[in-house]
Image (cartoon, rainbow, N blue to C red; front, side, top):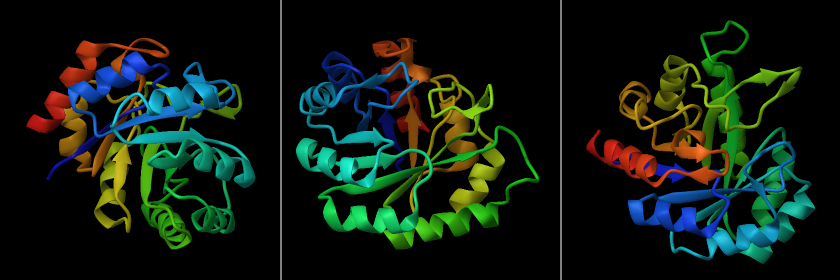
Length: 223
């Protein structure tokens, strides 16, 4: 099974080119999401995704009308929706934007009796019916009463993730704390269609480490 790799949280063209040259299948750019040290403006996002031929994914948490405008103006390969959004809004987006739609779902760091695989897969099925093309499983981390939106450096419950992948009606990318040191274990344990990493291949928030990117991608290919 070929496992795709998305290098996310890219803030500049140099890092985008580094990821592309290392063999990344996708690059991810966070657009105007408050509180993220990797968030960039729409103008910067456009420069980043047009600097390489690697498909670009824009991470957004905005009103549907704003998402439509950004998707039309920047023409990414895909948008990735962060946070809660109604399926009716996704249906509206699908009818009005010329790109794929990915959706982030957050699951616990460890086994929890508050959420079940069956519930998550019912949610994924609803997203599939609304027009979502790919699900990104990330880690649910709360800090001072609020939920962090990615870049936590913490892994989710891989056993739950594996069960979700095994029965999900959509391709699944695994995110959350993926590094060159644990990516082989993650691929073997979860069997996702893709790996999504940001903080695990950085020198510091917002700046990637070329060596870590290459090591991670080579490890995924070997796995």
